[in-house]
Image (cartoon, rainbow, N blue to C red; front, side, top):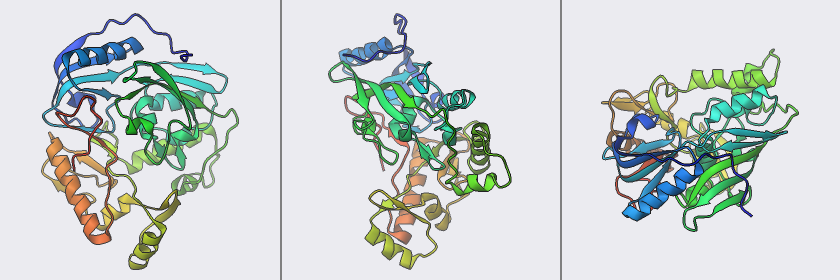
Length: 355
């Protein structure tokens, strides 16, 4: 039986043509989409995909645009911006539309005295993007609270409910990345706790609460304060957040690398040892450097920024230089966390890494 969905109105899909995509991303970069729709209802998503298939065009699913770099040429197909919003609560269970702003979800949970996502405050984007990427920060990950996800299978046309296990969550990944475009996130179901369980595992949060009272609302306040101090927020300078993932290497490689570079920070992780991508970039002297219109933030070395009319090509070239510097010095390859959308992909645009 198909899962119950958020209430929907009758679709009245409007299709835009030659729409600039830059305003729909926090990088403020990207050319025109041949076609564009704002999908406020589930039927809009279905109708959009049907339209693309009838036209023989690729389609791409866009959320809040906070973790994406779009080609300067734009996109030769249909961009479907999922804007399905709404929160339904049943005790400590929240069902959230994929287009709902993520930080508004966190604010709602804190107001309702529900614990479990307060450490994920102020992360830009929508719940759909949060699930897709399995966002994490300050000792917490979204997968800690996800119970299931409702998605449209674009191959079968059926709506499916995937369990936590079926979502195959990992470090900044999920089944929705593996099958990007084939499984379109429509709704997420999360289970929070009515009992406050503070997560002070992250050093900066622990320091913040030295001689301060720890409550649900003060945890959120602390995370917001730390993020504002450490990260350039997109409302002040265009960026897509952390551009690279923290690399995970085998235990054997880790032992060898740490012997050679004892200054490197390391953490135990599933599959080996996790290194700090930010530290690797900083040690190769990229923090704060600018090349023409783009550069590396002077606040956080993981964040690449668009200072003024930067292009996707400039960002990619900068990222390549950083990757090469880190590879030469530490023999570690940095993988991008940001989704890269090319102009002309296959039937379904998955966000291909082009470097």
